[in-house]
Length: 175
Image (cartoon, rainbow, N blue to C red; front, side):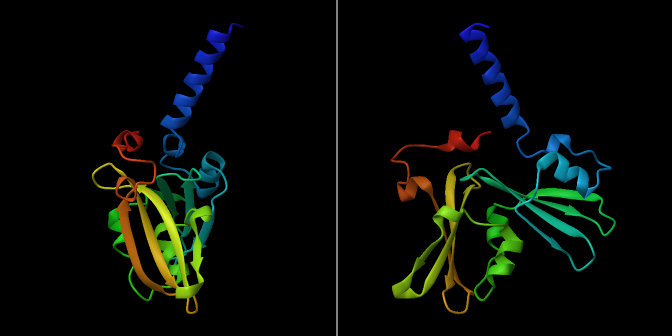
């Protein structure tokens, strides 16, 4: 096999993987949650809902822009899937919420970006997402280190933080 052909096959495979990286194209309407796990893998988090249903959390990428919550009913049937790393979901995070409540609202943060500030007794969790203007951004939840409750939140674009240097990174959110 020639090097050119090998590279072509590799690129086609990578493009196909990006097209369905959330597993959505593989989940039939009549699927059960066990089918979802077969398609999307083991979730990072899962919990039972008050109605007997279950929610599975799938963050994509070590610094990915999406976390999908897959909802199932009390009979274990797939009900819906949604990306929760959105400004709409971030607006639900309010002062006084617990860490568990935050996890059940927007999923787990990027572990490498979790920081504790001893002088302020403050724990900061961070997520990466694409904002409503299709720009890479970061969302932070600041917890009181002692109580574990939300003190405040902060959202800003990566460009404003100069994370990857100046310049427009909107193309990073266009897939």
